[in-house]
Amino acid sequence: MSKRLEFPKDFFWGAATASFQVEGQIDNTDWSKAGRDGKVPLVNSGPEHYAKYKSDFDLAKELGHNSHRLSIEWARIEPEEGKFDLKEVEHYREVLQYLHKNNLTPFVTLWHFTLPLWLSEKGGIENKKFPEYFARYCEFVVSHLADECSHWATMNEPNVITSNGWMRGNWPPFKKYRIFKASKVLRKLVKAHILAYKKIKTKDLASEVGIVKDNIYVHSNVNPVYRLGFATFRWFWNFKFLNKIKHHLDSIGLNYYFHYHLGIRRTIRDKSDMGWELYPEGIYHTLMELKKYEKPVFVAEAGIADEKDKYRGQYIKDLVYWTHKAIADGVDVKGFMYWSLLDNFEWALGYGKRFGLIGIDYESEEKTRTVRSSSYEYKKICQENALVIDDGGPNVCE
Ligand code: BGC
Image 1 (cartoon, helix red, strand yellow):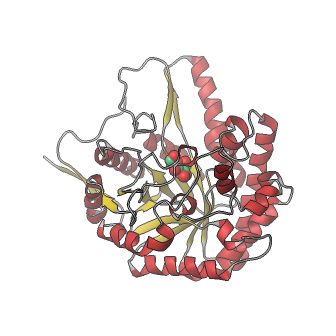
Image 2: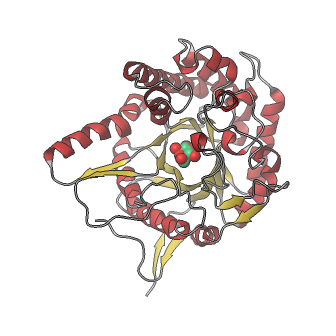
Image 3: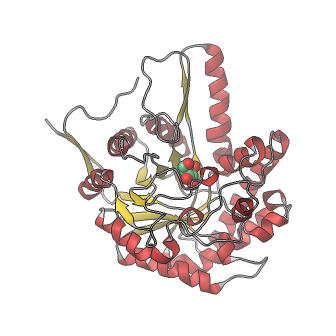
């Protein structure tokens, strides 16, 4: 017997990309410089999405998507302090117009990790004026592109930026265990979001302005020490930032990738090529945790690095199943964007990890695209606006 789980009318189905990870040929950012200095893998032309966006979006449309999340590269728009490049604005205008032409609703993130080199040389986020620089850039972009987009997010994953850049030290600016600096940086990002939110609203009141936040599902057995530890971690990682910006926020984009568990468990799950355990029901819990903010939510990223495409199809169905359950239990989820449309530059891990619905042959001159078979599993969901479960169905909660 098959079961049909319907999604709300006008649900957004799509995939996500980020400019630096797919566009190629961006030399003037902190990450490009770190690559030249040998601190992280060197970004190269990659999938060349900057030039090939049309055929990529044709594929997204063929795959049944009706929306797409992308980001704008700050260093292209403002290559020098205070000097804005209108040619690049036009490029992104064409990108957005092409999405509309293909009935793909754009969701734009204004800043996805990479800083213009001029700004990183002035201290980046640690610069006193960072919130002003950031808000000026956001205001500039929205004032030029408001006609083409009404779903904006100021920034992607503030906690990840801070923990990788100032605690683990594996991302620019490569600082380690700077706990006080890290919390100062996080506060700066709160300020930057709020200022950008206010500035954007002076330009285009109708726009939805949100944030994209990575949240982790943390759970344990009944051990009170574990429970207390995780309650603190949950507050710090999942809620603290959102609590501070909640009065300047129209929607929340959730990135869900993993869970932390303490205590003995009956089953151990398969792992992705990132070594992350596949725990799709965590998306349900992280969505439910967002209910208290009473904002529309969309899944801005959830996905799997799986070069052999062994788990992706089922994992997507499981994620969608648990997203449906969160909607049934009262979360106002508006959309689901798989990470990622294309294989891409996985930050400090380079091009080796394959998250794409569409695979890239980096060796070929044409950067040949191959649609992975799991993409067709997702296509069925997008086209039906429903998940049809035949037998067995998704994994169940422990
Ligand atoms: C980021 C992406 C990244 C993905 C997989 C998210 O944290 O937004 O840029 O590629 O995770 O690691």
